Length: 292
Ligand code: NDP
Image (tube, rainbow, N blue to C red; front, side, top):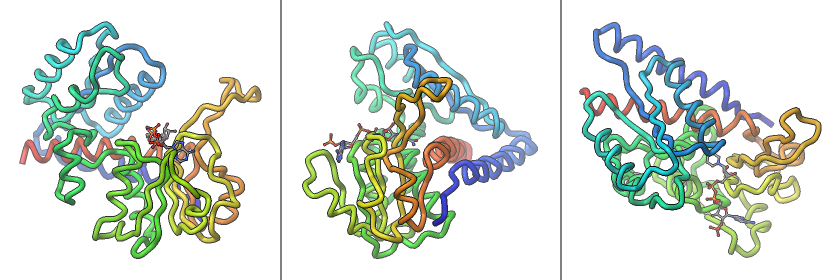
């Protein structure tokens, strides 16, 4: 069994990007610039946005954190987005989700200029992804693909079972795993809360991608020997032995599944750091598209 080390792989990617940034600045050009828009004070969102800013600093990008009050109106947020769309000094930006209930997320996503949509959530970019055209891939699925690629994991002709069909993980990774290139060429089964016989499907899977948000859901007895298991889940589970009062759990019961799997991602330290690294990669892509 091999543990897919997301921390190490993400660091490799960051090191590669840092080298590129050095070359860019040595040539007298400005570095890539990412703006993160944070609306309100949601604890998890604040953490994620701070990580994104720190990641940018680590590789030498410029980053700006734009904090808006949770009482900001949809119109005011859309005006900010328009300003970022038009700002030549900004290569890409993200609006951290979820947004307060009075703001329509789809309106916000659609307002972002597709060329600056480094989250890859704009319908134009989702369409390009589905058609296998060059675009920004959403960071979590892109991170999974990159991990499979960097560990040379065979995917062609394999049966890949994806658990979850969200727009940010389950749906896009299902599309990518079925595409006619490596990593891909899988026969994909996408499952969700209405799926019948999920356990039977999981037992037949060569590759399992679990993205449902239910801690320790996939257990050893549901997994075929030799399966590749990718755990996307991040949940906080109460744990009195921890100082914080909780532990971070994935959707896969690591202890039992790792006894059967050929490759497995840990939580934390698997898909999470890869997701962060892929946002940086997308920002570099946006920079190159704008400056070349
Ligand atoms: P969503 O809640 O948007 O989607 C969950 C999906 O799982 C839904 O499609 C739902 O089905 C399905 N589901 C729920 N229960 C079951 C079940 N019992 N059996 C089968 N399918 C089920 O979650 P996200 O996709 O946003 O996130 C999933 C997990 O991944 C979360 O823990 C999240 O924190 C984590 N995450 C981790 C990231 C990372 O960087 N590592 C990035 C993004 C998310 P239905 O559609 O029928 O409701």
